[in-house]
Image (cartoon, rainbow, N blue to C red; front, side, top):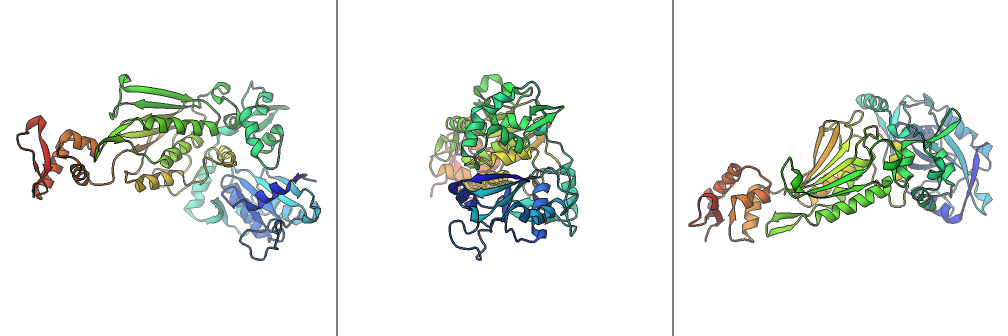
Length: 470
């Protein structure tokens, strides 16, 4: 017999209104075994998820009318036996670490029991009975073929440090921690802290002793940095220079954020935005505030925090310079991910962290797998050059340059449309070009086309250019 949980009408409506996603799906109780097997295998091959058997899809026009019309539960637990067997025996190899429970609607026994299946990310590649491999990507179960199966196998070989046990930690402190209980106030169905952590495999049982995992501390402890033996904070540094190697004298401000991951992301994002407001950049109208798209900054930061290697004792580092933002994440690219395929492929080094952060009412990782893609799109939308990704010294570095997409010549002319003249130093600032000679070539090219001319009586180090008089 599986556990039965009764949820309120409001919780039922919320569940029925939930959109299918990378971690959530529904299917009819009459659904064929192949559909159920495909979805379970796809979740296990990706980052895990939850499948509700006995709820009709939103898009199904044949669903009965009414508030609870799509609730398509079993009359009793025995009625779900065929579905359970399809799951347990429906993949090769069988999916491990499955958790089954039934949901009932309070005051409505006639609606029946919906079977909830919780699937963890598996260390194996699971085939359906028709010998196909599926992975979950967003709200879809996609078949993978050939080299993609090999890549999936390679990525499965990476062990996540989020599952390692934490010694010498009083579990009662975690059960009463404010971040965990604040999260559970919004979580449905209502669950006690201890029960939730056990169901989510965030507690390890070793030699009859219960120990929290790294993931549980990172997610729900008030100050993970003081509870874990390895560094796991975010350090944000503001340097008043654009040099590649800044010196100590350029360090204007430094902040360290040591909260649980959800608050760490929110607090770090706010601090970065505050620091950026003080960054002056040379624009077409002179000095102005740097205008980075907030979405790009947050997506890069979230990506660095949730996909970092927590086995490495180091912090996520953010450097805010006059001409760029650098976000450094401990650990190289995981599994089969490379700089070339990072925008197309997906891999979670810490799947439980990724999945459980996504359960917040306003998840920081709402669009699963789209983080860096969003950063690239948002930078382009504001006419800034796209991010640069560097893998160096077991770190992944993402650079957001404050450099316009326009050509250097276009930026020089735009500046001259608002200013009487421009010199080499100013041109280097607005274009991001470091070479005096390269900027000089831009001036000469524009002059040869009869667009600009030298400012009379200014030469040598004071040389300047202006729009040619008509």
